Amino acid sequence: MISDARAFDDGVMIVGAGIAGSLLALVLGRKGHRVTVFDPQRRPAQVFRNEKLGHEQIALLTKLGVLDCFKAGCWPAPGHPHAYPEDARPSLVDCGAHHHVWLSAVRDAWPANVRFVEDVVARVETSPQLQTIETRSGDRFTDRLVVLASGRMTQLNEDLGITRRTLSSGHSVCLGFSIKPERPIPAEVIEAAHGSGLGYVSIFPMPGETRVNVFSYRALTDPWTRRMSRDPLGALAELAPATAKLLHGATVVRRCEVRGTDLYETEGHMQPGLLLIGDAFHAPCPATGTGMLRILNDIDVLVGRHLDDWMATPGMGGGKILGFYTDPLKRNLDSASLRSSYRNRGRVVGRGPRWGIYRWLRRIKTMIRPPVQTAASTS
Ligand SMILES: Cc1cc2nc3c(=O)[nH]c(=O)nc-3n(C[C@H](O)[C@H](O)[C@H](O)COP(=O)(O)OP(=O)(O)OC[C@H]3O[C@@H](n4cnc5c(N)ncnc54)[C@H](O)[C@@H]3O)c2cc1C
Image 1 (spheres, protein in one colour):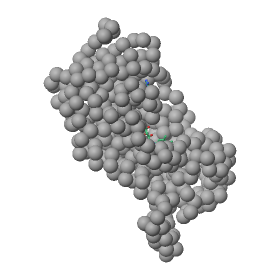
Image 2 (cartoon, helix red, strand yellow):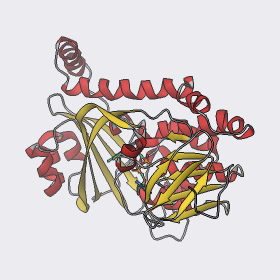
Image 3 (cartoon, protein in one colour):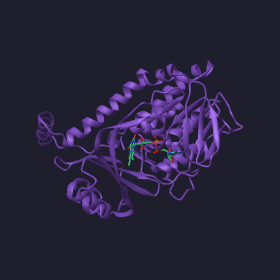
Image 4 (cartoon, helix red, strand yellow):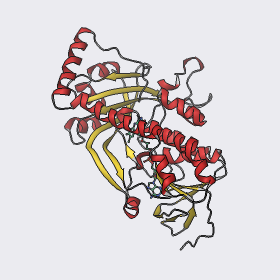
């Protein structure tokens, strides 16, 4: 029984205003769709997530017409206390911004047809015609399509019969802290030494600080990981001397945050009236830099290839939903992202002859030709 007075049948309800939900709302809103977004917080809190864009992400953000929101975070306007000097502004791929700064800019750009409901979604009911959302405060909303963009939270999944299958538990750990360097350090991605258990270290400027993000395959409970929380520069010097040399004399100005990642996939999600995007659907290893790319691709595929057709005919049956999940553009990127999550880990800590031979060949190659530090293009 739908008790809410505002019952529509041509709009989209989005659960979660992280980067997936907020961007989708912006793109749909600008196309003239009526959108309702639910999240417990109107102003996003600071969270450790993607902080830097690669070339492919920039290309998709440009295609979706939303790159300006990201530029504004990376390049504060002249007069801002952390604006880069006119003649020393890094290129977009060589700098970054805190995730919540991007998120705020995206939400601030929502047009009037995007309605925000500051509440937790407590229940979702789906059907081939209309979907209903009930918030924790007891308000009910109904519309044609629900997009679950609620990240790694799973409380809604159970009621909907959606389960998660863990593919790789404790797959990787991201560690991020900020420094004030002795002298400006340009963006660099430094491949970690063999045997360190680390993937790479990404150093890049952010407004007012220099960010150091470490992608590691050591466990969350590893004593080195714990030391990073207390003394990131000291701990980094133990395993990544090349990086430590570069950071010599720096002061830590933002404590080291540590986040572990499990790889998982979702089952039971093919339901009429319901779509899952972003981390709600599947989380790749952050070290691959494909988390954001997959979100942008999902939005591009949904809005550019499916949604107009779906809205042109009544209902939101399973056949429409299936069309999104089986779209080759989506499937190919999702599979490639998962493959690179496994491959990146295998290269560093994988067991068995394949990875043993790989690392042995790499060591020989490194002895012949030492690695060159590269200008950063991944975060
Ligand atoms: C440490 C770290 C580093 C990363 N680095 C990179 C990187 O370098 N490159 C890259 O491409 N990707 C990276 N990623 C991955 C990328 O950041 C994530 O894939 C992406 O941010 C996920 O966005 P999301 O919107 O799906 O989820 P989230 O950001 O988790 O947002 C989910 C939102 O849903 C809301 N919500 C949850 N439940 C409810 C409910 N019941 N009702 C209402 N609202 C709800 C939450 O409040 C939240 O706002 C990284 C991830 C992490 C954790």
